[in-house]
Length: 236
Image (tube, one colour):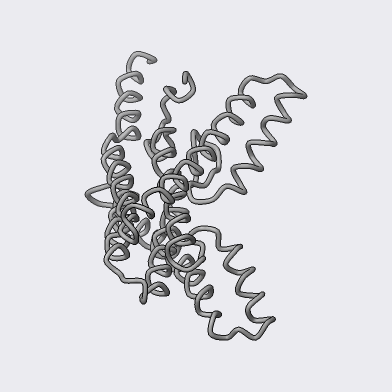
């Protein structure tokens, strides 16, 4: 818990924000896979695999089922980067990204089962935006919408600790594994909510993202700059 209380220099790299986003990421994947026709919102490797399998079997009617979410995910990454380049005034650019995610998922919640292709594409669009916008945790590379990179980095840090005994490596491994566990918790929550609220279960991700949006109003970068300005005269 001590590590969870440690403050990041940027709010976008804080542990609590990472956990909220990871929970939302797990929920989105569970929602799209279990509720929207066995398509992954985040795990585009899985979608590409299923795309290849369906092409090899000549199931051309299923190709768009997996291709469009992949395209949506890529467009989400591009859109988030465009927001970073062009929306630098007012709120932090990552807040604009989160706001867009909330709107997209709100639209998805209103779509019937017959619109699964569009719903999955929009969900993947939101996931791509999140992946692009949130890529560090206390200065370490990580992802909030998938686990393979976090699992690799966490395991590497754990092995480094076993061999070197450096506590920082153990803390790093702990961070990654906590994020992974939170992603799984989001998937569990998503499955539970689907059984209760059906296709409107994705609104829970909207709630989590709104929490993330509020957390980012704490401008740690600005506070750090002010602290540096206060400290600098005393150093002279």
